[in-house]
Length: 208
Image (cartoon, rainbow, N blue to C red):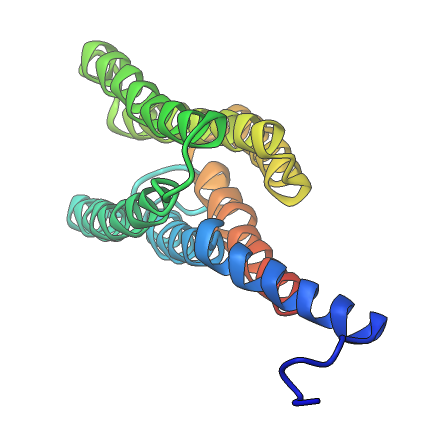
């Protein structure tokens, strides 16, 4: 009897099933690691630059440094959004049904959430001092991000994503109450650093 025709042992059958499950997961399940790492770098560098501008006192040091910090944050945020969009595009797999619908609706939720941020920020930001305007934009943006992470974790039963969103919501609330400098520090260390750690943990879990 040829090797291709002999019956597989139970151990070989289990190994074959595991290989097929791994191959299917790599093909149809989007990899969240680039998403977490991209946003982690964006927040760490962007809010870190804002913290250097404000300091813990919250009093701006120089207008030029403020615009440099904002430019860093915007550029890295745009790059992170491109990477996130590519990750969400992976949800448009050959599989049809509720999973794809959830992915599409979740992607639209990000767009609608930040549409609300821009609307409120533009409407009320002009009536506030520079530091408070920056805090308004940052607080609204990170609150939206935190809630979307919580929702995404609930939808896909991703405990890491859910807990990260809860942590972001708490840090954002504390930072907004403490002032612009503290908010920038917490978002850089907790948001950016936390996102990088979460991405590395997810990568380790996926390799296992």
